[in-house]
Image 1 (tube, one colour):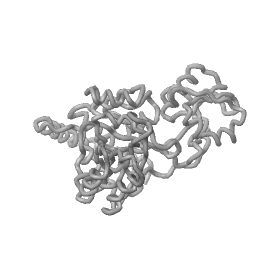
Image 2 (cartoon, rainbow, N blue to C red):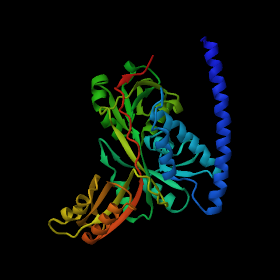
Image 3 (tube, rainbow, N blue to C red):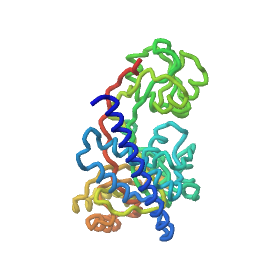
Image 4 (cartoon, rainbow, N blue to C red):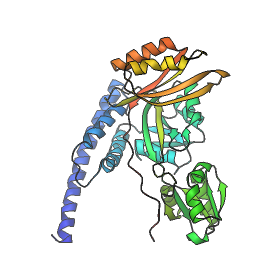
Amino acid sequence: MSLEDLRAQIDELDQRIIALLKQRAEISYQIGQEKDALGLPVYDPQREALLLDSLTAGDLGRLDAEAVAAIYREILSVSRALQRRVTVAYLGPEYTFSHLAAVKQFGSACQLLAQPTIDDVFGTVERGNADFGVVPIENVIQGVETRTLDSFIESPLLICGEVYVDVHICLLATGELDQVRCVHSHPQPLAQCRQWLRANLPQVETITAASTSAAAAAVAAARDPSQAALATATAAEHYGLRVLAQNIEDQPNNRTRFFVIGNMAPERTGNDKTSVLFTTRHRSGALYAALAPFSAHQISLTLIQSRPSPAKLEGPYIFYVDFEGHQSDLAVRQTLSELRELTQTLKVLGSYPQAHPPQPAQSPRAAPA
């Protein structure tokens, strides 16, 4: 078939897709009316997780699961907006990895509110100025985000979901690579790209910035070809910078996990996680005993982290644990019941759908000429 014939087929398919999207939008609006009458929230993590699982489970042809999920996240975002626009607070500024996480989870049709600190994200949701918040919880290289853990100690908010963002770092500038003499960025990306910088820009000076976005903004404002920034590709597009190299992080599978926080408790999907905080009695073997119920009921732990109690730094310690399963599952209910008897305090932070594991990252490469 000729190019014109193939394009004619694409045009016909696009018209059919638009017609179907119009039908879907009308039904979504009607669902919104029913939700409003029943007092149900617009965002339904369980329903959306099950939908994405079903859409990506079969033969996708030349598409892959990540591509289908990305398309449908935007469709779901628009569908939510037809019912009521969801407001989401996140750790700002824009065009950082936290911003990418919020967009990945809620799509571009939601209202995003950048916040200066993790505490501000929690506070904005607690005061009702946002429906949900997105906060980092752990990074492959940097480990657990302790500020998020500490915020959960006092906050009444629950974990409603999780989302992973691959950390792909780009070198952005207005000039050429051989002109770069100074690189700006947040301390974490500077550390995560140390080997690449040593190999490709051994004499470069590094300057810390409040965020990757702030670094990109500073380089764009300077219009000096000797200045560069480590930031996201979306920051390059927004600030009008050239991408001199991309995927330059030293750890190719570096990624950050984020929590969605709010006031709702998602229902069981069959592929869930539960997170808890607990304190033990200050005596030998207390933690070992507290973890025994997980083993007895064959519950898989995915993360365990200790934090000193803010009220008393010498003890007891606060333990944060993620594990597979939903708190409505029989094995999880039994585990939590036994755990409550073995600990001084126990706080269930929520059960939520597990996020799909991210795809392997590509190797570092120079940007196309």
